[in-house]
Image 1 (cartoon, rainbow, N blue to C red):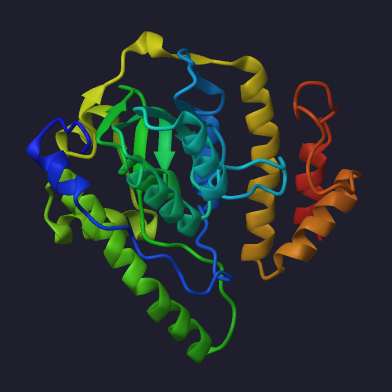
Image 2 (cartoon, rainbow, N blue to C red):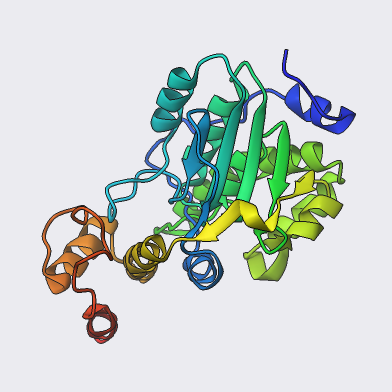
Length: 296
């Protein structure tokens, strides 16, 4: 039995796993404007504390084509296996990614036998906010953000295809609303309004708002996080490519063709960036890349 901090968390801890999609071809993404905000306010923020029972999530959720990394349920499962039957700390600074991969990671963390403490170092948006809800205790920086919204996918087709996609997503939106409501103690209809807010872009909560609304338990101390300049440069470089890919797909191009076009103009045919992007490569052409693709 986990050590639990309060009755609300106990109620949340007894929830079952969230449903995972039967059709793995459907991916629920983070919108490009979330990546933009993460780049402006959260890139490069890292935790000061390290340890062999800490899982760091300073990346997108799901496999990331551009970095060759990403946080996956498989990688989290492997880390939990290595940690063993001990309490776990999960450090998050992520703009999100694949919502369904986030659900899978949430389920993996919920199965851990000991207490899970989540620390939101700068941002837990979209899929990362779901993962944050797996914590028996959630701590958040005063200048950090938690962001919740409905599943967001890129879909094409006629009215029947799109209606089928909407019907397919509805149960997952409801399951997330129920999870957020159970964790926070807020009414489901209020949580749903937050998820639907701002033209479907969802709601950002500051550290104090997240605590006030029940999504987090306490503030992190300011000295528990730092800005890593090298990591920030890398985050920003790769983020440009992620956002550009989403923009092209949103304009009607499939992901394979979008990636091929970006790689062709960028001049690096490999799927993942080599070694440590931003640490030594010449990324000065990204502005020109964006302009060139925008003009095509």
